[in-house]
Image (cartoon, rainbow, N blue to C red):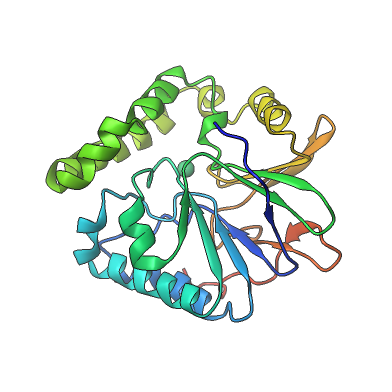
Length: 252
Ligand SMILES: [Mn+2]
């Protein structure tokens, strides 16, 4: 993990996570596509992982839902919104092909930002905080290794099968494992904040909003996109808070 210069965030910048767009189903992306069209004048959007319910490579662009989502992201970037995308546990294979098609910038581990009120913010997907689930953390390291990242786009059929299998295993695991094991661990969150020298940790993955102190820092977890705290915004004054710019209610 490298030390990064923080991205300077501006008032009006937005943060979302966990859209889980279903790639074979165009209707599942409609709400997100319409929401992107409303972002005129927003200089930056951060997407903290699991934009897609799964991602095996650009071979997926043949699905109508994927194509529509990619085109909408590209239009949004063309209108002047910089879009930074963090890998999630479902779409960890997003790569340079996705960047070329959309103009979005992919970040593999973390995004470090600084708000106008000088808060140093560490953005993570959040699955790395589930440290009691050792089997998952091992799998995560394997899946993110270079051989997997090299082979998957070249063998899309195999990657597709593997992705579907992993998705089933991950859904079963959530039902079967003790709740504590799949939960984000406060000690892990504190360790990340210390390691990155951050004042605020923002992540998704849990699909359940929280906003609480974390030692001397603060920890925010976003709702999944469409939930009441599913969009965060750099508010006037420069602090990060829940945005009112969510997608239309009942829209997805
Ligand atoms: Mn996730």
